[in-house]
Image (tube, rainbow, N blue to C red; front, side, top):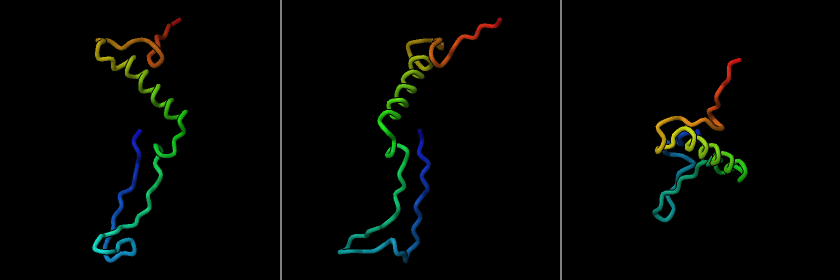
Length: 77
């Protein structure tokens, strides 16, 4: 899962920038990403999906795609 975060651009002078005791301080809004607000059950679901994909499709010890949860054989009638 990739998080889409907007870039933060500051142009001085700005209310978001100040120097306090010789240290530059910048204030900006930090948006909550999906990773920070995700429930444990959802994270486990993502983990299982990636694990199944690796085992069934990307397994480095296999030279073929395995039939399983992701890839299913279709039967024509």
